[in-house]
Each structure stands twice: as structure tokens, then as C-alpha cells.
Length: 303
Image (tube, rainbow, N blue to C red; front, side, top):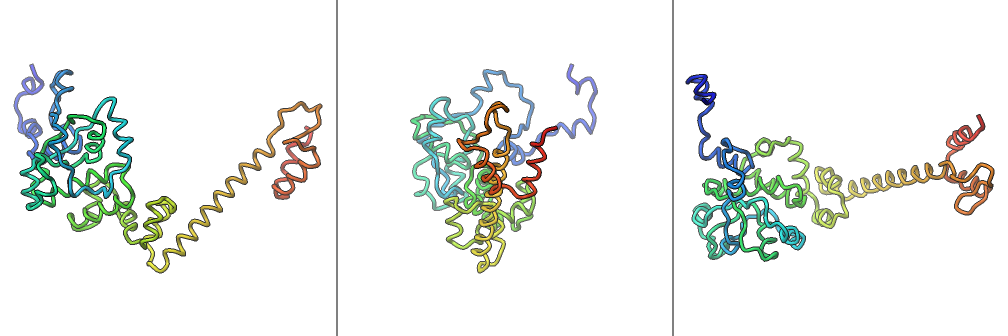
């Protein structure tokens, strides 16, 4: 006897047991959440995701990634076990209903990828014939819904480039109407969204520096919140401070190594890196402050 049969019917139990709406269920599935008890057998779980030929799939023309990077590495990872995470797709009809007049962009493909464009490119390069998919046309009810689905999935990928992430967030702001609404939709804080959007306010050369990784993204997000005329000076000052901090850390590490106890016997002449005690003392005077030298003497004094 089931628990429901044992307890008998009740309005509370029946209310909890009500199924999700189709739209809520589709977004839950898109987010990887379970919407119903899993009663499938182990063998059914292996084959539960439908598979489609890669030639039937078109990449999303509105993919937030401006360029698909590291496709070779992706292909190498897929060669052994294939695609593990299903691609999220919509039918050709659903896509064209949301974006009429885009037949040329998707070609003859029967399906359009909402999330998984990089996996699709990697699968083609790896020579895979089929990939698992999650098919859900409710993600393409209209242009805003389709865009929101693709951008939300892209932002949730940790390996999205910082500037691509910022552009995706900006388009989400256009869909939702405010940064606060985007933060709620993503489960993030408003400052998290603001900091990432700040990259779009950087001057073009500073954006290039972010792309080639010569300007750390943490610095760039702070600098991007300043007026344009102040950004270059602020970026240079921030990099000087980072370099000073790095130099101090390296100096402290060298000092710690210099005062470490020698492994040689106490009865042998003290030497370090081929130098005698006099040279070592001169080297320590240059590296250590007077206070550090006093501390060193105290540590070496016989007890």
C-alpha cells in the first residue's frame, strides 16, 4: 500500500501532489532539476535522452559566445566517451516562429541548438554521428524567451569569456528590464551583475587588454566603474600595486629561505651556496632589516 493510500485523501496532500505546469516543468528540466519521481530502470536511464544526427542541428545564431574557443580540446574529450551532457534544442518551426526570416542563418537543419553550440562543434570535429539532446519548444515561445534561455545557460557556464559574459548579461538586462531582475533570475546579487557589466564601459584598448589577459579581470571590473578619462591611470596604478605586492611576497619568501637552518653538521664551517660566513653575513645585511637581523641573532644564540 502506498503512503497516500495509507493516509487517505486530503486537500493538503492532493495540493502538494499536483503536477507542475508544462512551462515550469520545461524550465526545471532545462536547469537540470527533476520534476517527477524517477521510476526508470538502470537500462532506461542510459537511453532516456533522445539522440539526433549532428547534421540535423544548427548552431544558435544568437549564441552569446562570439567565438567558439578550444574546439580541438573539446573534440579530444568527446572522442573517448562522446557527449555526456545533452544539448538543449528547439525545432526549426519553433525557432522560425520566434525569429521569422532567419531561414538562411540556420540552413536546412531541422533543429536549432539553444545551449551546447561548443559541444556541437566539438562533436562534428571528433567525427561523432549523433549527440544526445533535450528537446523543448516551450523555450522558444517568443524571441525574448529563446534569448533568455540561451543567455542564462551561457552565463551559468564558468568558462565563458569575461567580455562575452558581460555582453550576455547586458542582453538579459534588455529582456528583463533591470539589473536587479537579472540578478534574481540568475540567483546572483545585484553587485555581481554590476561588476561584470562594468567591462562594457572600459575603453576599447582596455577591453583588448582583458581579452589578451594582460589586464586581470578583477582589476578591469573595478576600473570599468570609473569615468572613461580616469580608467587608464587607475588601471596602471592598480597594476603597480599588484606588482609591488608580488615583489614583497617574493622577497619575504627569499628571506625565509635565507634564514632556514643549514642541513650540514654544526662542527663543519657554515657555508651557503658556496660562500663562507663573512659573505653570508654581508648578504643577510642587504636582505634583512635591522629588526630582522636582531631577531635572527636571538634565534641563533645558544640556549
